[in-house]
Length: 325
Ligand code: UT7
Image 1: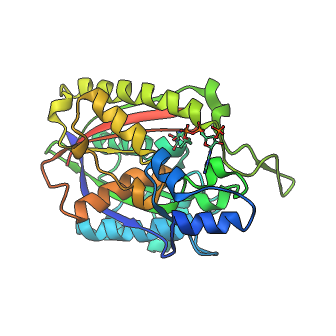
Image 2 (image 1 turned 90 degrees about the vertical axis):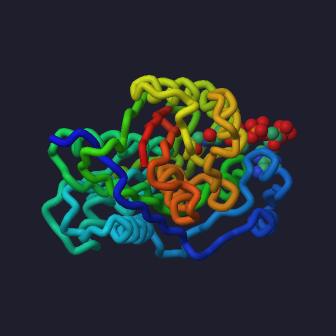
C-alpha cells in the first residue's frame, strides 16, 4: 500500500503531417464539402490538426508517447507493472493496444488492458491506475491515451470531420508518499449514447452499420457545459480544495468555447487554462496527456503545481481529476 500515486513523467507523440484549416478546407472543397478557416476558428478555436500517414496507427503513436514518458520518469520498460491505454481507435479488435504496446516495449509480465471511455478515457484510465497504485497492486503504471480519429471520420460530413486530429500522450504514475493524484470523479449516462457514437460493428468478418463518427454537436455542447463544472467541483470537494487552489486547468481539448466557459463558471482565470486545441484539434482520449506533456515541456507547468483535468465524451462519459504535479 502506498499513500499516493504521482505523475513521475510525461510524454507525447504527434504524426508529422500537420494540416491547417485552409488546407483541410481546400481538400474538402475538392470533394464538394464547404467549410472555412473562419467558421472552424470562431466555432471551435481549432487552427490545425495532425493526421496520421497511411499505415501509422494508435499503437505507433502510443508507443512513442510511452517511451518519452518513461525517459522523463527515468524508468525502463521493465519497471512498469501496469499498462492502461485509453483509446477508441485501437489497432485490432483484440489484443488490446496495451498488450501490443507492451510487446513493442519488449517486456512481459505487467497487467495490460485498454480503457474505452472515448474522450473521457484518459481521466477514467488515470483514476483506475491510481486505485491500482494506491492499493499496492502496481508500483509504476503507464497510462496512455492514443488515437487516430482520422480513421473514423466521414470526410463528407463537415459538422464532424473538421474537429478531430490524431496523437498520443502518456504519463508514468508511480507509488509515492508525496501527494499526487488527490481525487477523481467519474460518471456516465448511457441513455445519451446516441448523441456521440461510431455505431458500426464487426460481424462475419465485415463492418456492418455506420463505421464513422456521428455527433449531435449542439446536444453534446449543452451537456458538456453542464456536467464539466459539476464534476470538477466534485473532484475539488473530494480533495478538500477549491478552484482558487488550481494552478493549471488541463481540460479535454474539444472546443475553446467549452473550455473557457467551464473555467469562468468555476472562477478559474482563463489564462490558467492549458490550450492546445488550436494546434491539435480534438484528439479524444489523447488530448489531456498531450496537452499536459506540451505544457510541461514548454515550462508552463512546474513541479508542485495543482492541476485540474476534466473531460466529457461519448457514452456519455465524463470525469475530473485533481492532481498535485
Ligand atoms: O470530444 C467529445 C466532446 N465533443 C464536444 O465537446 C463537441 C461539442 N460541440 C461543439 O463543439 C459544437 O457544437 C460544434 C463545434 C460541433 C458546432 O458548433 P455550433 O456553434 O454548435 O454550430 P452548429 O452545429 O449550430 O452549426 C451552425 C451552422 C449550421 O448552419 P445553419 O444550419 O445555421 O445554416 C451548420 O450547418 O454552421 C454550419 N456548419 C458549418 N459551416 C461551415 C457546421 N459545420 C460547419 C463547417 N463549416 N465545418
